[in-house]
Image (cartoon, rainbow, N blue to C red):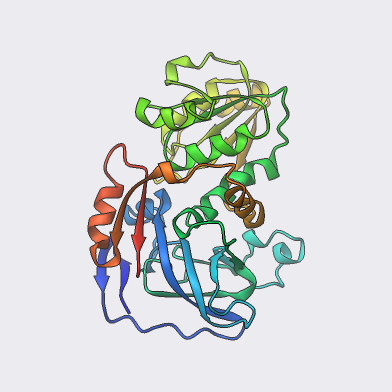
Length: 317
């Protein structure tokens, strides 16, 4: 089969990769669509020493595995877990000590014609959700994880820093809570996507220091962190939603003095993410900037790294 293979920070299109054989408890999924996200780009830059097929945002059709899922469109949770370590036993499987992660840690990913995942990781896609829209299930779930970790109320002032793919989805999901929300970014044309949904936006200079209860950093760069941090009142909460390729410098003393709560946030719940798509409470179509066939995957990655580009999809069929 064909797939985009990463090795030694070099990406190549391979055409001789064996079709995987699903082990017991897993399913063989024929990939239909897959989305390129910032984590894929960071892996290309050396964020983590991964070797294999990239990609973890996907929609596919089950060809082998559970009879209940055969020939159905599915999306999949990316952490394949052991089920017996302390995190699995305590209901925190995304932190499994023995996990593999689709396209990220010791498991070939979705930028190929086929992939394997445990059957328990797979979720059927509702009939009224298009294949393209369903590719956003994983990042929407990641955005919803914030609300699993932090209780948001209508009285909270919340700042989202970043107008990229993740920032847009974080903003849309947080807006549903009815809180006092502001989203800041660098690109007016991207912020328009949120303004048409009634979400307040601005550039970074629109942030008044020490006036927010919660800030969510979605840029993965030091400037974004600085903006998110200075926005917080004492005893505020800072949620880090992006991976950082390099080291981040911060004023630890100010975190102590202001008693700031710092929370890392990544994978989230798929069922409510699919429900938001099915009920059209989030808009994802406007985030799609380009589509490429798998054969043109290298060009797709170049496009995804272009300034101002949001989501790039790979089409396998």
